[in-house]
Image 1 (spheres, rainbow, N blue to C red):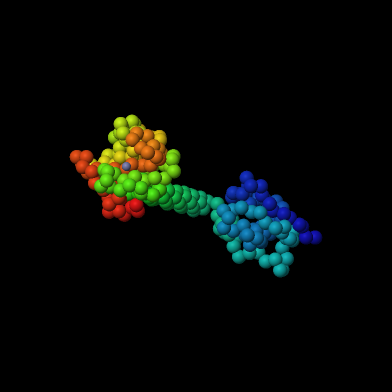
Image 2: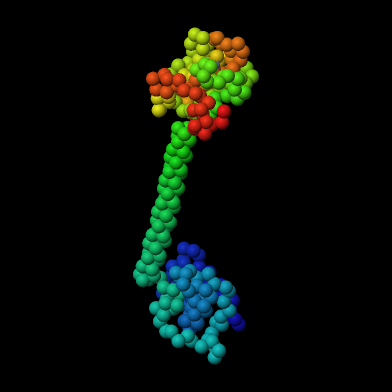
Amino acid sequence: MPARITVRPARASARLSSRQLTFRLSGLLGAASVPLAAAAIAASGAGGTGGTVVGAPLQVSSAPTARLRPASFSSADTVHARLGGTGAADQAVRQQGDKQRAAAAASTTQAASARIAAARSDAARASRNRARAALQQAEQGYTRPTSGPLTQGYGSHPGIDLAPPYGTPVVAAHAGVVTFAGWQGGYGLHVEVTQADGYLTTYSHLSATYAGVGQLVQAGTPVGAVGTTGYSTGPHLHFEVMLPGRIHTDPAAWLIAHGAAV
Ligand SMILES: [Zn+2]
């Protein structure tokens, strides 16, 4: 009568030596059936997994028959080889595999680190480029200091008058450092910006000042609001431009020469 036998070693037994396996199978089947059973186990997918034997139920006769010929291999070592081996060579293979996996992981980590470093470098470079571009734009930028019509030009007096509504923001026409902010006689509330090239721009009759002495400003930075302080007959900005040495020049021509609309 066929014996239904399931060979399912626990995980801890996954490294059964071939002799242990032979012994166990011998106890169940008798010595004559051992090579056959071992071959069936090997064929069930155990091979190549380092000796793990978790097979499907095996249908094995309890006694050899004509159909169930003894397998051609005869020694436990052959069974061992068919099962994938559990000896020193196999361990060396596993260790080699571990080393390769570790090397691959290290390589992956190195590659990731390199990518992160490259990304950081790119970000830093982009940041520097943006800062440089902003600085260049600030150095190169010129802008009309406020809105409103030009109500009095250069020549009849040392600046130009721009007359938007009271309180309209007044901005620096070009980058520089604030070298005066406060009351200045007939100029009323007054702000002066000294540029890197030594030119000076001034903003007068303000209703408020938004910039303090020593503050760095760019073209477009608010420095005050349109008012009518000092000698003034109505809200407007009196805007002057001076060359080094406080030599007046036409602010409208100066703005136009630097690409700003007037
Ligand atoms: Zn004026």
